[in-house]
Image (cartoon, rainbow, N blue to C red):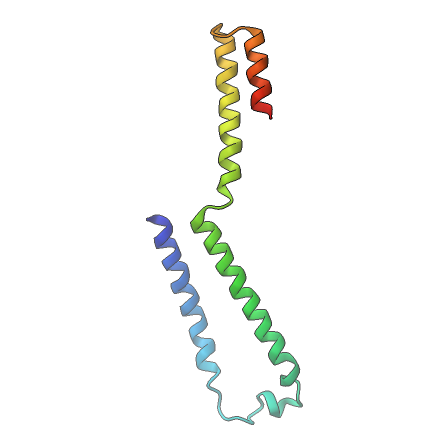
Amino acid sequence: MTRLRNLAATVAALVVTASPVAALAQGQGYYNGHMWGGGGWGMFFGPLMMLFWFALLVGVIVLIVRWVGGSDQIGTKRGKSDSEAMEILRQRFARGEIDKAEFEERRALLDH
């Protein structure tokens, strides 16, 4: 539930941040120093800026999906469970619950 709230807050922040940009895009007239009146550079930089913002948007969406979905936690959980299993194995060996041969056999299984 906390992740959902954080996601909603992130989306709201992005919308609020982008609102002034949309208002400024209304402009003061078609040829008033924008795009065509700037010496033709708008024809070159316009598509580049469009691609930049599109790539930024896709990147933010991917990061949010990975964060909410927890896709990079899979490797972390596996590594954590392996180290916990090895710690339990060491404790059992130290308490004398298992002998050295069994310890070595199980350690070899955990290393693979």
